[in-house]
Length: 182
Image 1: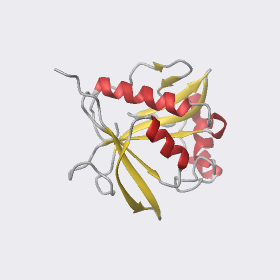
Image 2: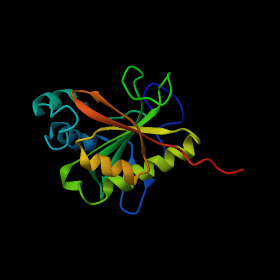
Image 3: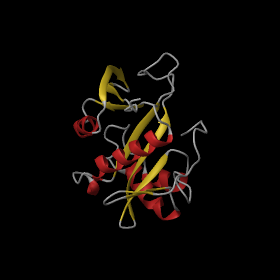
Image 4: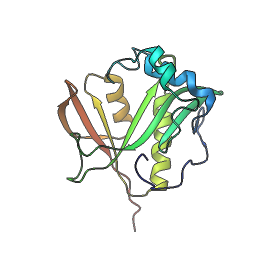
């Protein structure tokens, strides 16, 4: 998680029925460029960035930081899932001191509609619940992003509040961990 040493990183790759969630490698660079240059991917994320700028800025091994998982299908990157501390200065929080862990994701358009986002995010949430039991995870998305709203519901996030940010209505939700009964 960015800005904290909550747990050892990187974890061993996480394997699901169809996916491998792993740390970034040099072979993922083109996928990162595509994610950030894609108008479809970046519709609700501030818009695409110029490809030439990305080619200059993205390092040889992109995204190598705690909390970032590359989603791999048959050896090819199809997206990323991130867990990061939410900036306390932004609207949307569970407590006054904020700093909750926020789930984020981006998938290449050719991976959309196949259930990969649900599968990958659920695996990351399961991993996180095992690594930091009892810690809630938050998610923020534009209400106009219907796909993201559906994903949040599938993953078990419930609405906490809505607010205006970045010129659009935002939905802020939480996925509270299931506490073991005792």
